[in-house]
Length: 388
Image (tube, rainbow, N blue to C red; front, side, top):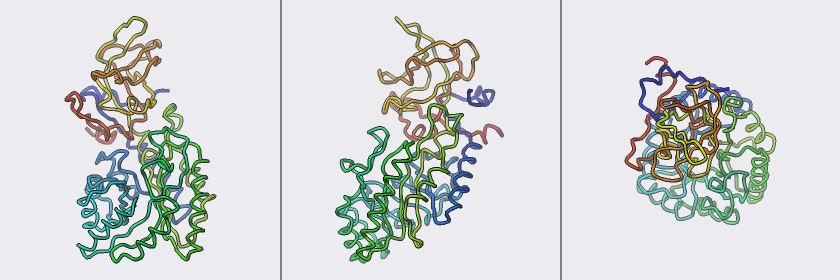
């Protein structure tokens, strides 16, 4: 079954562009609200790096979520979208001084700190402002995830986080500093995780670390488990909203949370991934030596994931009910890697047909580039097209 798209509204729009189903986004947010309400002490921060389109950020903020930011630019985008500073966390392995100062200026909720040198800089900059910065330490749990090697983050070999054996040392350092306030621990093992067993393994590791700290009379008020929940790229219509019920229940069952602790989550892809599609037109159908090519006006500059990760996106000809044929679906960029899919079965393709690349709401528009001096794609929501 194809997705439902307002093709009549698309006729006047310049392709390629991103189309966002805001009704689906709101259903996703409602499910998150419903499931987290079961537990009371769960707080969700949307990972802005997945998609910073201001129209989507406004809807997510209206849904009651906080924001997880990894740059000063993302902090600005979150603030401009109306996220309360008290719900913003600032993560990232390389925070520049100006970004730290920006976060201090607005009194954000917490810095997720990844190294002792970073901790020392935050302390110094907070002292210069006469403030006390709340910090959580990102601990590398050395827990693998069943996902692409480029998006796993919780192994000892990855650049992220502080070694488990250094945990007590850095906490004691923070406790001796005048301008930082240690409030929690942060973890994140990777992205596009569909095996709940990976999250169980993380829970088990966190339980060990909390017991260790408690034995040393160190209390941790906030536990942040990051994000990572994946989406169904193969069947975007069958499972348009990820299984947040099982996701939150996994942590409720396996993480031994103390009564005084708050559990924080930072999903990104799982919130916006399925609501977005890249809409393109067919420029040419070309007969090669032994295959047909559907050449689109969208390319790797608009959606880089297939070229970068060999990521799969379901491709649909939303203009056609013609008999199925097989194509390599490619873009116009002068790179051999500018390929969206090989041997893709599509309803017969003709020039000017609309092609939808599904499940592109996360790491699509936000990663677009101007390579080949191409213009960045616009983003439109179903709300604005319905009233446009």
